Amino acid sequence: MVAAAAFLSKKTIGRYHSFYDRAYNKARQIQSNYLKKLAKASLRAQRKAAAKQSILQNNWREVSMQAPAGMSAAHSASENLSFDPDILEPKKIAAQAKAEALAWLKKYQKKLPRSGHKGHTSAIVNKLLQEASGVKVSVSTEETFEAGSTMKVHVKVIDKDGKAITGTFRSVPAAGHHLAQHFPSKKALEGLKEVQLRGSAKGHTWLCSGATIRLGPPGGVVINLRVAGNASDASKLGFWVNGTSSVTLVPDTSSSKEPSVGEDSHGHKKNCLAFRATKDCNWNGTRVPHDDKSCTSKIQSSQSGYCQCASGMVGQADCGHHIFTCKDLCKA
Image: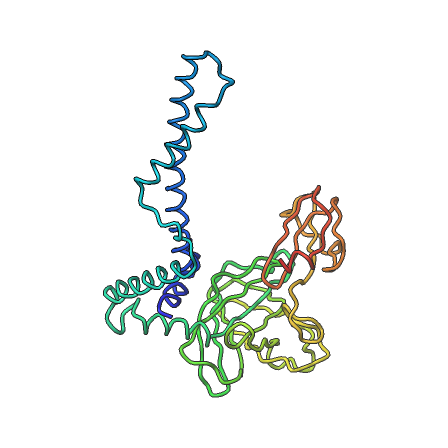
């Protein structure tokens, strides 16, 4: 558990998936080195025999001396080398893996920081709990040219009991793009009252086309958000964040309104939003919204653009690509 916690805290992928995997690879390497030594000894003996035969008979087509010499040399080398033929036996590998795991844990515990310090077991587990009990806010920017912004946007999520999680978006997504960011918390929120978005720069604006929030870890409830006071027209999900002013978003409980980011008309999570078309056979060219395609449309090689998925932008394609659908790419 400690090893898993340390691994997850770094969010990196190591060379091995387990101590058993590492022990198995070590055993294979030992076996490989042993066979290489036998092969080298055999090759040296065969070359020596071939040279002798060439002098005696001047005939390279005869191999009656090389093969026996190679076999004899390999046998002699094996008697002088220490090797366990059962080194790859599963029970032996499991025992070796267990011993290495215990040795690693003992070494780790010696280096473990004092309680309350970063890196201590309790600190690692606490961090994992914060990741599981926080929220994930997803927002999209309208596709119009001036919809994006360079300002920082501050976020405040308030639950029904008044507890709050605060943070700041890493950046505002560019026009037509999507951002999903996790905000950790020590305690899980009890339901959702509202989400407040506040700008940080006078004279700057951001046009957001829609927002959702997920409470808790992956698999938790995803809630569509709308601007507070817009209950009679909740389908108009777009809103501006102006300068240093705030916008309050509340759960959209309507069932027949336009879906928000990453959900279909039934409130089910969807991976694909649309194919976004661009000009001049350049996927990063000027947007052409009237040429956008649905997720199931076949994108011909003469079309440039990209797929907008719930997780972001994928499948950037200049002209000349293979035919594809964004539904398939967003699943990958």
